[in-house]
View 1: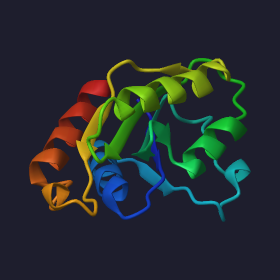
View 2 (view 1 turned 60 degrees about the vertical axis):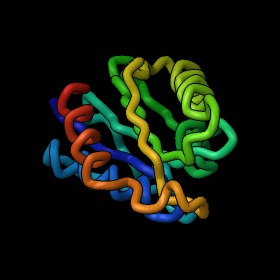
View 3 (view 1 turned 90 degrees about the horizontal axis):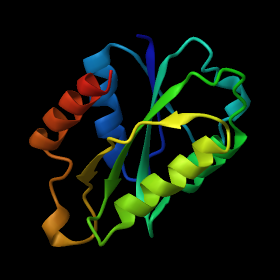
View 4 (view 1 turned 45 degrees about the vertical axis):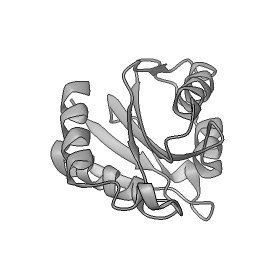
Length: 147
């Protein structure tokens, strides 16, 4: 199965997870930003697309939302797998999953139901050190299982 990792990062948390997944699957990882022309990213050769985002207020990052809105896929057989870093508050992970699923379904794409989440370091003391070694091991296991 051909996979690719596409991610948005703000403080480096999501990037750590993205690079672990890419290494585990021996695949390419692309960091998206507002400066990147999304039309240059072709997904035609990939069966499974891992998308990673940081979460704020139950929403994926602005860059990830823009990327998903601009997706233009003719192939409806793509599968997407979501991973996210978050501060661990409330149900923002569930809301983010629902939002990403909605965006992908509007493009006739399928988001796998099993997503991965881990804490990211934040300004709060309790979140320091995340994603930690165990978070990264768990991300690798999840990615392998998703394939």
